[in-house]
Length: 118
Image (cartoon, rainbow, N blue to C red; front, top):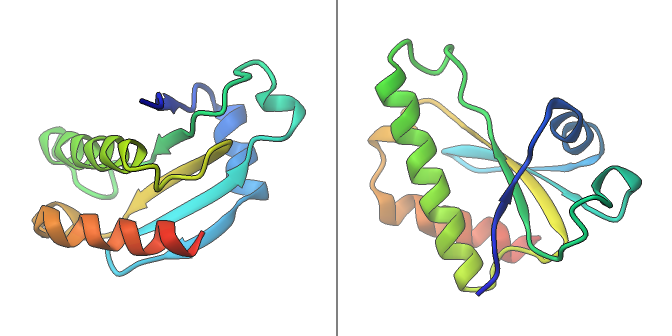
């Protein structure tokens, strides 16, 4: 089973943000970038890396922001087990408003459709 590694520092987030491709959904934005660069040679794995950006602007309540992060992590785990996430890729997920109110099945199908396009 492939392992999911999270983006560790601001330098890695900035690299994916600057060099990545943006994919939009009704519920979130996904930024993807290849890890074939010197900044990612430390990891030296083919497992996908992910980052989640849920700021205070999304919701003032930390419980709501944490719920969104838990949902995204679970979706990433399921997609990695199904080999839908690209190997040697890194990506950032930025949820849009009302992400926490949408049913999980709808979110999962939206992630799957974007991952198939990548």
